[in-house]
Length: 605
Ligand code: DMJ
Image (tube, rainbow, N blue to C red; front, side):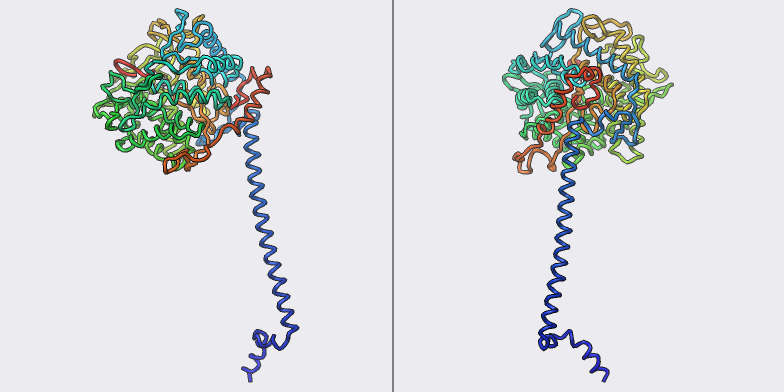
């Protein structure tokens, strides 16, 4: 009985129930269709909303991008009261106080004096000899000082001077020179200077000139190992190494072209430049020692280091390590450039193993190494290292980052002391450390080098500690007292006596004065988020790398469309044209950020 009742309750789920009742069947079909339409409609609505939202997001990010181009940078200085540096381990508030503005003005005036002297006595030549008031072509007649100065003029808002220099580049810069050029010096000064001028101004003239000289240098990489020969005839090719290296290539000369040549590929869409220089690092990676410390000579035929040679963060080693870090930054820290960071971190362990402290004052310094023995000597050139360490510190976890930053601060203090202990308050070329004596000047000349002020600029940005600005200001004043003469700036033959030499090095305008100017400017002026400086202080814009991200596909063929700068520079050019007309622009150029050797016989400068 119970079974009969339950089966009669469930009879409506049986098809025969509906076959006998056609009206109910019709109702059921209608109900099913209505519910299905409802569900489908809702899903379509949700999908459409999602599409709409993602389109709006795209529009928003495009608008943000355009806004960024118009204002110059995400952290525009129109809001410069509170500047934040994202790359910094801790957020730091920066104030542009009147003292900074006044000091920046003094540095700009120094640049104007250096530039006007060059224009007057050495126009178009490589370097000015201020004492004899003439020019000298120490780099083959490529207008080294002029090209090295382009971006400094631009950043400081010296636009008439920039335009005048641009005309010389357009009409007189000729690379077809029967001259044995240093691949390293020509790359960092000329290729780097031209690319930076292009990135800042958007003027294609600079890019085509950079490509011309890049093409002339390129055969230098045609060695059996891919490690470049360090010298090449600009008119005839024919690469070779300097006689005094015994046929070897120099470490720094071989590993300091990556930033410039990768940038050249990114901007021209031609992968050949990037391929050559990236292969060098892959080859070096094969022989990389476990402490990351490479001797200064490598054989271009075998690709093997000369293990008897010196290991140093000074002359002939220095910028190799600098570029490992900076290529990683230039490559947006992506998978494609991970090996650069890994190699750099290994080398920083090596650097730490070379650090010793003086007695009695406990200054930290970086030794040099030959075989297994350390020598207590440090070049002023190695004073770029505190800046490099500060820049690389944020890529570590918090504990290691603090340790590396603190080492950077210790080394910077040593470098500042290099200046403070001499009667002229200018540093000598290198220092020796003896027990009980702290440090003594070795080679006593000073050729207007930038490394210490470079590091001070990095440390000030990363710590917000104004002491670094004070130190930089003291160094600037020492240059003013000792090196400034009516016809330019000269180096000193001896930092003890103050005897002057007869050369205004092009890197004084490219680097020393630029870093000093930036030391007294808000960090959004050429911000570390957007720019990476080559070893000659030429800022190169960081652009997306998508090999991810090389311009080269795995099969070695070029990718169809390289990342383009031209569109992104449109707004900047417009802003530049407007701003050039304003007087305020002249006074406060910084508010438009983005518009805005070696031992023995020969040394890299
Ligand atoms: C510059 O040409 C570069 O900074 C290079 O890396 C080292 N030598 C000079 C400045 O001292």
